[in-house]
Length: 371
Image 1 (cartoon, rainbow, N blue to C red):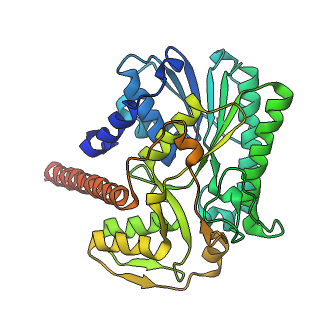
Image 2 (cartoon, rainbow, N blue to C red):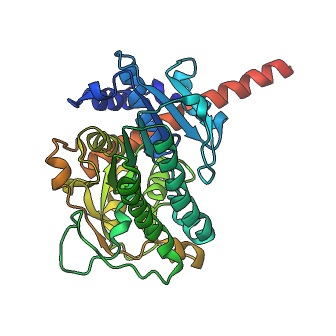
Image 3 (tube, helix red, strand yellow):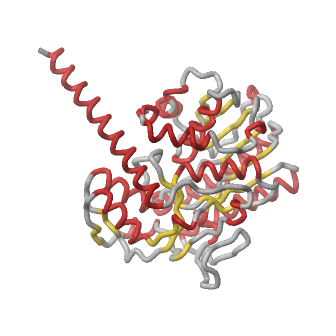
């Protein structure tokens, strides 16, 4: 992937790899990551492999449903023995006795696209709940020293109006008797499973709770609102807003989300959950759309969503996270919402331009051969 030739992307990798964390905890260790080709998982793998170039010597097992996709995504590291791809369906037990003990297990695989919530609600729930259990079982069987479950801001549900921001002990409102409840309720169940394994199996577990994340590692198939906005911005098209846009959410640039996850992994307390968010990236959806439209030099247009789209949207109107607990570990975000979006769009536009140039050259070469 051309991301490795993008200076801005590589600067992000170096920046996160240079944070003053107790990296010695990962020295000569091994880590298994599910969802390794996702928005966050792929950036995390790149950070670890960047750190390996400095002598970390951390063996990374990258799980992906499509091994070829993983090879393509991590092309820079394909011949590096410290990265091993494993083709795996998260809904099935991971039986790999050949791996021996694995020191850290990070479960980051999940259905995270609103369109999937509405078109495959059963698959969403099964993937989240069975997937966590399979990874926890693997961690126990392979004597992991720590298990990290990437949870979501959606576990808080709707703000009841009694707080401005959600702290880790806040219990919002989710109506479980709805189709859309499948995603947040299964994430809640995943957290409960982690606590059950901690109590019954003695596993050390931490739970980073992520907000709506974005960045240049986003998948072009992503159907989240911010991803759709960014894709429109890259294409130089007007931004389509399919609501009044008064939803007030926390967002996190991928580099900050992954640095927060690493803080939780290496400095978090056993059994604790930590919000990864920064108030400089709390914004209403309409204002988010306006920023991206401004970067692209376009306008914001309002459009009524169809029934399938609407069914997948979160029902929460305010979901801002309090990250005081994580900041007490020493974490700080490097990007506010404007700088994060600007960098995301700039990198992805450069990527798009590079792909266009390669395709143009390939077509020209093909025509020459035909002649």
